[in-house]
Amino acid sequence: MSYPPAGPQAGYPQPGQPGYPPPYSEMPPGQGYPPPGHVGFQPHPGYVPPGGQPGYQPQGYQPQGYPPSGGYGQPIAAQPISGGPPGAPGYGYNSAIMTPYQPPQGGWMNMPQGNPNIPRGLEYLTMIDQLLVHQKVELLEAFTGFETQNKYTIKNSMGQKVYYAVEDSDCLTRNCCGPLRPFDMKILDNYKTEVIHLNRPLACDSCWFPCCLQRMEVSSPPGTVIGSIEQEWSILTPQFNIKNSAGDTVLKIEGPICTFSICGDVEFKVLSRDGGTQVGKISKQWAGLLREAFTDADYFGITFPMDLDVKMKAVMIGACFLIDVMFFEKQGNRESDRPGMF
Image (cartoon, rainbow, N blue to C red; front, side, top):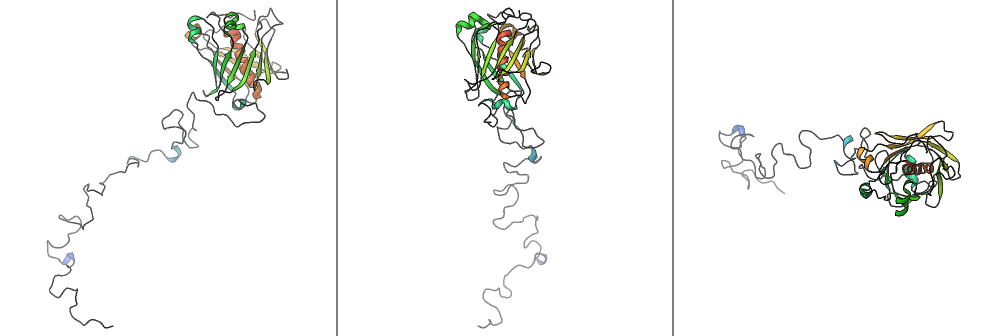
């Protein structure tokens, strides 16, 4: 291999022939490549200058999906979590300092984890110390006075539905016996499964008949008795015993002398077994002038200790229904309140 001889070589410009231009600093004015920003600058092919040309985004452009230039929105701690569309009632945030996700008002309560020692369907009561009982307004009954089967919605303190109760009785006894009528009550859960059954036989409630006073039996599941509510003989105030399946008194209930509701609540105290300590209450809540005057659709509140046996909590629900029928059920839209137990 030998080196090419000295002198002009093929492919290289010969002396005096056009070649590569000198540096811009040595070029005459008006020739060569002007500096960046110089008027008349023409960039190389493939480079798109500013000015909104295709493929180049103008200054200030923000691709879709990025936050506006005013900021980046909420911090990660306040970003919404799953469980519903943004803006929906109860929509919450995933943060220790933000409120947790709350289900929409009016929805059903989620069933807690099952416990083999608790009758199926009573798991809802394990974490509850307060219940709201709302009776449904029956238009036929309101306008005609014709007694229809009572229906109730049972909710927790957050307004979530826990149970739905439906009276089971015949037309004849409802309209002939009125508040003294015998009936069964089916209490259903979210899956329309009967979890509690109440049975009230025909009986009197006056102090003039001490041998035939009111009683209600509570079963859960239906067919298995877990407790009962029994009226005690008294003259001035209504009194009841809450008993377990063995017939032992667990709690007592004592009502007021006058159960007539005048723009206020009527409270029945829930007392300990010896009657010395109040541990809860069943209150008939004022539902408004029109509702009180023209219907017997009542509002009730039930409070009891959180650690009370769930079976006794179910019996307390039965006590609420018994009190409603005895003292606040109208017959033909006529009030039947009276002082004491006369």
